[in-house]
Each structure stands twice: as C-alpha cells, then as structure tokens.
Image (cartoon, rainbow, N blue to C red; front, side, top):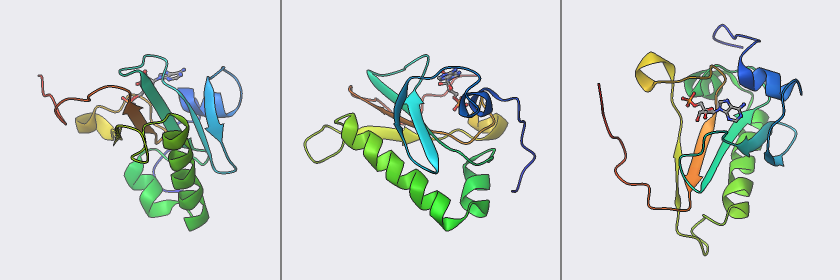
Length: 126
Ligand code: AMP
C-alpha cells in the first residue's frame, strides 16, 4: 500500500459493515453504493475494497486485478443506472483528491453522476 490510510474513515466503516449503505453493485474487488447527498438523480460512488487514499494511490499501487475489478464494477453501475451511451444519455465520472481537489473522505472513490445535464465541468468558488 502507498499513502497513510485512516482506518476510521467512513468508507472503511461501510466496508467493514459497521454502517449501512445503499448498495448498487459489488464484486470481489469493489463496492458501489448511492451517495447519501446525491447531486444528480443518479449519483453512485464506486470504491475499491483495498485501502487506497486517493486515485493516484490506487493507480500507482493497486494490483492489476484490483484495478480491473474496480473498472468492471464501474461499467456495471453505468449500465444498471441506464446512463451509458448504449441507450442512455451519458454521465460524469469524477474523483476528488486531497485539499485542492476538495476530497472529504480519504478512501478513493469515483463519483458516477447522471440523469440530468451535468453543466460545466468545474464551477469555481473561493
Ligand atoms: P468527496 O468530496 O469526493 O470525498 O465526496 C465524498 C462523498 O461521500 C460526498 O458526496 C458525500 O455525500 C458522500 N458520503 C459521505 N458519507 C456517506 C455515506 N455514509 N454514505 C454514502 N455517501 C456518503
């Protein structure tokens, strides 16, 4: 593993079953669940089951089978939510990292958001 990982972060607690989640899909390497404060009609978080702080930590340090399992679960979520380009209207997938990325939960997660026009890519405020 790469960066220092806080075992008490909320997604670690979800993975241990200590707090509930609204699961959308799951496989050996990853879990997908609905964001508790959705910013779009469909707003799903996909997280690896391994202890990775951020996207760069996961990309650099996860074994390839974990990366593949994570990506395949993303594809499953996109299909299940009906936002893929084979019939759906599309989606936005984003990940926040660190202070400048305004990351709240220090366990890598991808936001998959759709069901409405997502607007400009970034809207900055101080
Ligand atoms: P980020 O700023 O990228 O770290 O986003 C963290 C996301 O986690 C936010 O969109 C929160 O609404 C979401 N979140 C926080 N706690 C929970 C929870 N218990 N279940 C589901 N989503 C959560």
